[in-house]
Length: 586
Picture 1 (tube, rainbow, N blue to C red):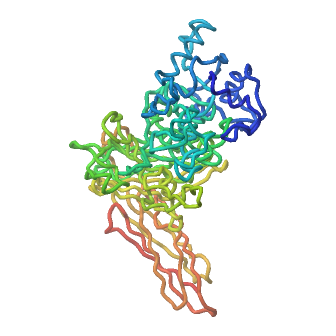
Picture 2 (picture 1 turned 60 degrees about the horizontal axis):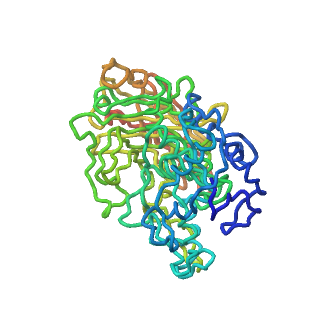
Picture 3 (picture 1 turned 120 degrees about the vertical axis):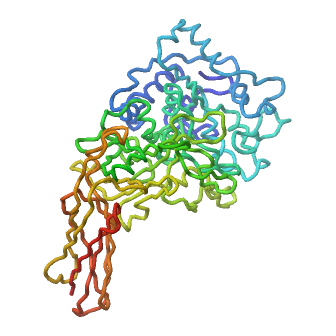
């Protein structure tokens, strides 16, 4: 649909409108409906071969797809665009004199469609209404506070056509944006989208699966931290794409928001997208009875192969409330989860492949989740990502026209760009997470890449209140001969023994994942000028198996003065079980 006051942006000469669009040569008006049907679902150079169907096929492992989009129109709407767009967020006073903003666009659009094509709406699973112009979400900031220093600086061409009224208008999150940006409509789960929208897939999740938003308001205090940020299509991971969130205004929408993040593990489980047996389902109380569990979790963009998991969940069972985290106040601690009490933990792996290509990192994503959304009861994210770096990321969001930098607020979703956990001691992140109130300890032990280059992590979790019936033990051996610098190759052996566990202790029989112990490693060096680097302070070894551990020794000065590198391993299940060995270096 287009409007008396707003033609389709893609019909205009290249870069000719106020916003600098379109980015391609003009499309004839009568060809616009089919152009957008193809843009969203047929691989091409314009959409970089990324489609709605491609997203859903990847997330659902081939169970859900968008097989065909039928195109209708174009239709000329009976009212101006601003008469629909200014019917939101307290903007009605900005309507030019003599006119009203008094309705939603969908009924008028559907009436035109039915009149032209008949009453065929019921034959479709989803109706996507593409309207001429922009989604306000993609332009309010870029063509508001980022373009104009103050609302008084907005020039006439960006202002209200009624010159008796201000050139600015209130918008969803902040007191003002330019009238030209603010008179646009906000995208909705109806699914109603402007030509700048790259978030259609996000809106389809709302529409088809009845899932709410998991995002926050990062612009006004008190600031509640984002729930799942760039890692989740239901948070502002829907903004992922080339150029980032401030490039969501381009038409066609092939930059920011064109490659949304994948679905979180919680959503994939709820939607039935994962094969039976590919998620290891544990319980907190069960871990106290059975001892720790260890599994290999593969990147969520691919289907797990033999011996691999799509993820791990840990139910916070026991006396209510299951989540023992003390409630906090956002106003005093904006990076807390507030008073939300969660039902289970989830562990998954993100790799920048497929539709996760524009996530900000590779690593292990640890989250707390609600079984059911808490709608209409304030800010209660249904998924809460555990941030491996909860401190302020201290990065600039944008610069005002006068050059003044504006930092990302403490609630900006990109504060979670560094949230992933990594393996190793020099990864730039953490390799473990202890939740003392909930009596759980999570470990990111090691990483692997298969022959295709696909990333997976060895992950462990244990209870702080029980180590299970297994016998724990460990030995460590060192090279028998002195090493001339370089690497000391130790051998770590799990001398413990497996034991029978209650198969009903967890939501599933987890016996195959209860066969390891996790050891904490530390290194000491003696000898003038010698130092040693321990690449990984954690090791997971199966009962009866051995594992090599490498420690790199180096000498600061010249000469062949001898040194001693001592490696110690302590069982996380039973700290009384430890072993040491010493490597001679020269």
